[in-house]
Length: 225
Image 1 (spheres, one colour):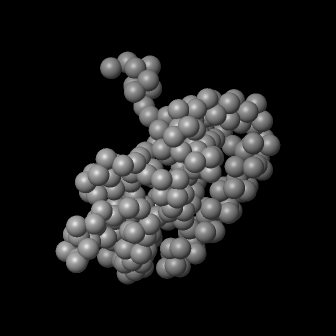
Image 2 (cartoon, helix red, strand yellow):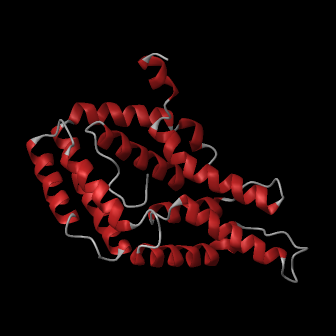
C-alpha cells in the first residue's frame, strides 16, 4: 500500500474524538435493547466524562455494571430511560480504576504512562523557542510526578496543554489557522446530531490533537489516547 493511500485511510482527529461519544452511545443503546437514541442530557453527560479524561473502557464497564444490576432488579421490566441511570456505576468504576492505577495493579498504570509521555515530549521535533521551553519544563516536571495521584496529575496536564497550545498558535499562526479551518469543516456532520456544547468539545479536542501531532506530540493526558 502506498504512503498516500495509508494517509487516506487514517482517521481524522475529529473521527478519533467523536469515536469516544459514538462508542458509548452504541454500547448503551445495544445493551438497553431499545432503538431510542441518546437525549441532549445524555450527550452532555458523556461530554463530562470526556472532559474529566475518564477512559472509554472505564465508562463502558460502569454502564455494563449498571445495566446488569438493573436486569436483576425488581424493576427489570421497565426500560432504562436515560444514560444518567448509569452515572453512579461509571463513577464507581472510575474510582476502582484510579485505585488500581495508584497501586500499580492496572497494566496501563499511571507511572508507565508518565514515562511514555515524558519520552514523547523529549523527542518532539520542529518546536519554536518558546514552545520548546514549555515542553522541556513539562518533561522535567513529569519525571518527578511518579507516585502522585493520577487525577491531580491529569488536571495539571490539562492546564499545561492549554498553555502549550496557546504558545504553538502564537509561534505558528498560519498552521494553526489552517488546522482550525480544516477541523471546523470536518465537524460539520456532527453539529446537527449533537448538542452545541458536545460538538464544540469534539472540535476543541480534535484541534488540540492536530496541533500537537504536527509537532510529534501526543495529547497531554495519562488517559486520552
